[in-house]
Length: 309
Length: 309
Image: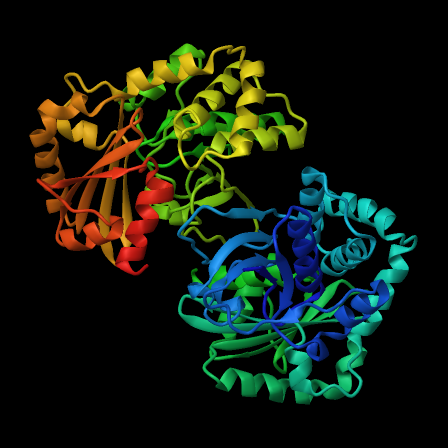
């Protein structure tokens, strides 16, 4: 049985390209493996679509149920972020750069997570250590993922290792101007024209369990907050609907990539708790948090502390 | 605050030497770190004592409470196998070769587990990848751990990577005859003369949660089963006492390293379930399982399947 390599739900560019890259590495090492993702190709986010097209990469195959399958996880290790019945799958490998999630296994497996900006950075090391050369188009996808996850090196999650990986990968992929690549992705990613508010909320969205409370956190990276000025009321309405479906809070990070901060929109049973988490004051459901760029490294740890996780 | 590097409770040679090795690697990389263990030096198992003495290694420092400390785990990732209050510690790294345990973190960390025979094998790779040379005595400890964990390459957990690591490490440690080193360790490890039965049971013992049932599994590696013939009744009495302390089952693997099989002694609320787990038939509380050498790779997975984990 081929190993299904899959990233988290609501896949971002790292999840998509990491599944392609790990499947390629496993194939090169003589293991049958197929890149998968938890959505249809048509439902990929605009940035990922641009990246796949630019480097001539095929979209991973959709997978919705993991039961009984051999699965490798990339870019997550929380069961809730996987396909249905992941707990009944045979997880054979994990490659990640997030906090350690609640996955457990019955057997020893490869679990390779590092506190770096992107799964692509970890995978680049794994290719090097295995002495396997990265196909040119796969390297392009990994390069794009690192630029995206590190917000072109500006995110506090960015490390020296990420910069080294970008240097390796741009050569293999034949990309001279990584700034231009990043701006092409940002342009695609931050486009909101004609997109329904709920689709924007879910563009890069994750649910977390905070001491028994379900908390959803979405993020929109924007070139400027002006892009969402006209649809703010629609976004709040979408958040209220999502919150009504059994959630304690729904947060939407409107991240201004140029100003390097986030307008944090909050719909919550306990707004004071969220204010305390970030030392801010909500006005009309939102507060500006200077320097907040990373959901993983800034938003979620502060929430976990506030919820007493 | 220095990072406390600690292996699992009832430390074996891998846990002890891996804590020394990872602390050395972290130190070489400019991080303050101290090798720790969950027992006093006097309570180390006889094999580990021989290894530390042979290579002139200092015993790790005892740690009993992890609360508020920066902790690196070696050779385990199950909270139950850590020091008290591990859930309230700041776990900064994991290096392991076991199944993925129930540790979770609030932040991204280094989590490096591989399905190889020994943590020492993973650490040898990490030293190589980091370009840090291993101190001679530390290499000796890692070498001994691999020989011990793989039962001199005979265990089904042994991989090509373990053999490569042994080849690397014997050169650094200046050990010519690894068979002789293994026999010295086996002699120390399998000595039961004058040791109370309960101490033997706990020599290499772990508790596991099996669907809410506490199941203890000890292992004694022996050169021959004759070594324990005279104390079998005492061992069963010790197992009954440990079982009475809230456990569903207590198993003791009497592993004949030369015959490559295990006399599995079982005290259980449900002996039939344990028989089914291994396809055997208990007679006078025990059954011979040919080929059973590894608690981690054979005994525990079969138990988990039988308990429906």
